[in-house]
Amino acid sequence: MKSILSAFFLCLILNSITAQTWTQKSDIPSGGSRTRLSATAFSINDTASFMIGGLKKSGTTWVAYDDFWKYNASSDTWIQKGNFPGGKKYGNISFVIDSIAYVGLGSNQLGVPNQEFWAYNIHTDAWTQIADFPGNGRVYSSAMTIGSKGYVGSGVEFVAGNPVYLDDFWEYNPILNTWSQKVDYPEVRGGTVAFGIGNKGYMGYGQSPGIFNHDLHEYDPLLNTWILKSGFPTTSIAFGSAVVHQGKAYILGGEYLDLIYTNKVWEYDVDNNTWQQKTSFPGTPRRNAIAFVQNNSIYYGTGQTGASEEDCEDDLWEFSNITSIRDGLINSQSISIYPNPASSIVNIKLERKHAFLNIQLVDLLGQIVLENIYSDQQHISFDINQIQKGSYFISITTEEGKTTQKLVKN
Image (cartoon, rainbow, N blue to C red; front, side):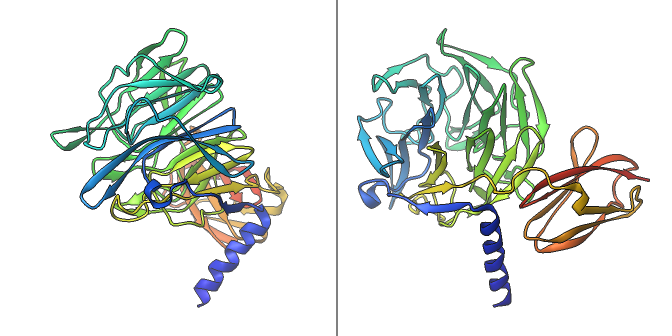
């Protein structure tokens, strides 16, 4: 009982400080017949949001969808549009450039992938087929927008029923209607997350043969290079969902062990290369869900919640008031770090207990060399025995914000 009450009060503390709110919204119409996983969703100008396709298993039968829906956040209503012209698919991906959505790849219910891509014009409510994707057909790939270009990479191709994980990476030019291959992603994998912020793209996590991954890479389209960034503080995931909201990325849900799912939500600050945990999703943990942004809120729903593709959802939830009330820098004078320089143990003392406390030790190249997460702590003894002598930065993140100070190991 004590541990349950502690967890309960921890949630109360986090919610009272951040004011983040999850609210269940209208299910996808037609009830259970619309439960699904591996649909694709996108928003155009953060004011109109859409969902296409997906998959569900019913007994021994696989059922893929080609339905196309528009969600209106103001009225909390779903409006069915004409069916997707690319046919019944699951594992489609999408990206948006200048109010045009581009949707493609995926597989039909028989497991046959395709390379088609289609463009949707919200102003004319019409679809136009564009140049086929030149790589192999696949499912569980990722897409993102950087500036005026779309990017597609990774994924899983099935050869004689066996999964083959991919690492190729492609750029789409909507003016020329052409695809060009770029430098491969650093590793083969499927079920990654991807997003673009500013003039860079980010892709990572996902599953490679027998492994759930814990890394995030930044893509620079000018240099055509990938750089390793800071990954999740606590876990590896695959088949999670990613959106960009107010200049930050949010990763929701996913699978971290075989058929074991998470309901955690993480915010990634690109400028500072740091993560902050947000209020967890209150619904059933899941993978292969949809996520989109509309009217200053994140929406998250559908997906697989059980061991079988029969165990799917048709729900939708709104995540609002996302930015913490006290987001920003912590006053460094409220934290004592001693001794500094230090040889073995660094003491970190805060002026009060914090519900969430993430401590990272970062080298001068920006790589995390040590990391721990605590709850309900005020005084931490941080062991640095195993790291090499030199200069580092110690980054301390709480539910109120973060601070970074220099630390010397002697």
